[in-house]
Image (cartoon, rainbow, N blue to C red; front, side, top):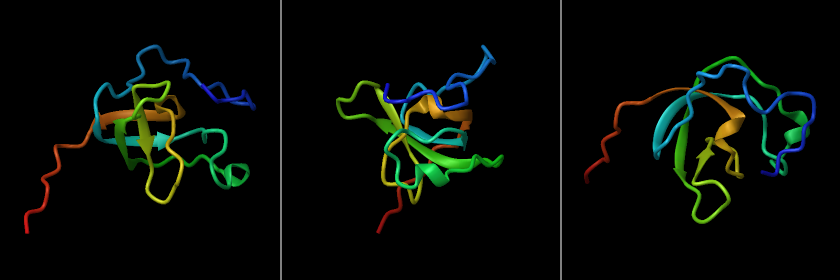
Length: 94
């Protein structure tokens, strides 16, 4: 993990927290930016749910990573509060 303890605990105190175990789209609240994230010094955790894509890390230390719209770097799943997956999204056909 590349996270350096700043002031917040990376892991929630809630032992029943949900973490995605397969790729897909999920509702999540982003709590901590990964080290090296653009503008991480200006990051402000907000208390709203947003759609986050969970995907294969392609050989990284973690099997899955998260992508947020508008953010270049992928994030560790531990940086979020997770909710249920979004119903399967249909791929548009031409």
